[in-house]
Image (cartoon, rainbow, N blue to C red; front, side, top):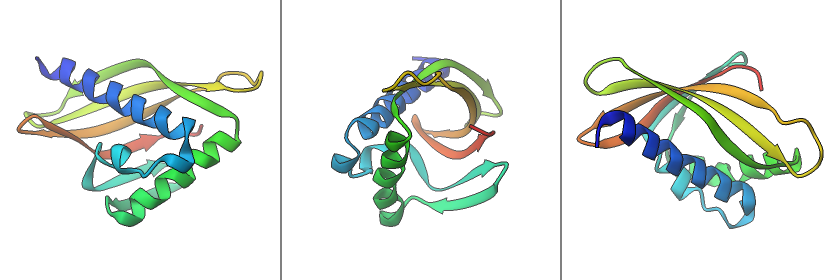
Length: 134
């Protein structure tokens, strides 16, 4: 399997765990979602930059995030497109166009997130995310 296929598979699994969390936030322990992230990573948005540790606190907060999106009416999220770009032997950027599906008749929302990923010995991890307004 080449790297692009590996990245596609990685993010398909990530999409699956996100949707599992949205379906049942109260039953989500956060472990499956946390597995996608490195031990430490950053999140950047117009609100600023946050450095995070992939620890018990992070895993405990994930269900709260899913509950927040569920209260907004989000029932699922779908990867609409995935555009990888290799930086070096071990690092890639992956621009993902996400689409949201709502329970009610709200207009679908699409937004982009750029992920910085590292692949060491076939083990892909998210080391950073850059998101615009969404």
